[in-house]
Length: 222
Image (tube, rainbow, N blue to C red; front, side, top):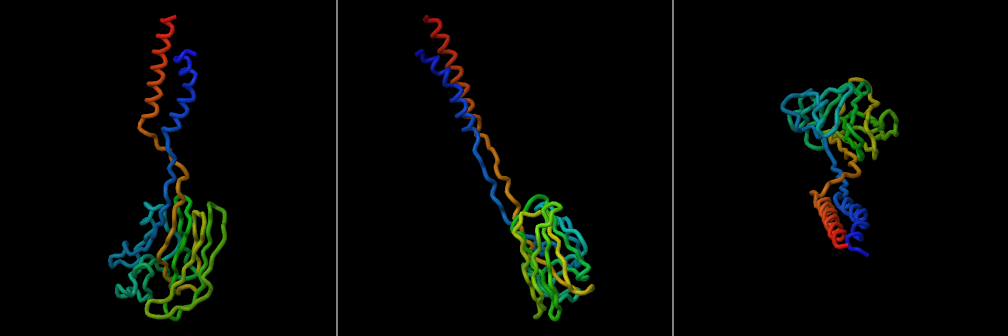
């Protein structure tokens, strides 16, 4: 069989192999993110962190007081709490009337948040998780009472994937509590296609040109 004709017949297969070689599948790794609030405090209790973590895909809304310095910063406001990831925390001073809501720009997994009360305060916290408008379920701390100079903290968590979490409390209005160490992991984009720099396609183009040249030579020699 003529070698030029043989190469021509193989070109579709060669092209398929080359085009496949031009892309590699990359699973983008998932990285856990944390909102710890300490970076937002500068002797300014009550700062609203609503959009402070928007670059990480988190916004905070609902009813709450704002950023609190904690016992280690002189206990401004007499909250009787230190945060769990540094002394600063997000505070609520209306207890059951608070409705802090954590909304994510995309699906996240591994959500967790620490909630704490000062010595002598008893509370029970619940988070309700959502994916869009669909409720995924709840998690609760159970009833506990704070103690010690830094208060007592519990961790609430929900596996997800989810897009929104709402925190609620059972204590009467005007009781206070803290929130800190909000952790979440954005769900990675499943696949990305990264082209190799034209190497395989250039090889296919060269093969086509060589095939045409060989075909012309074969026709001329007949």
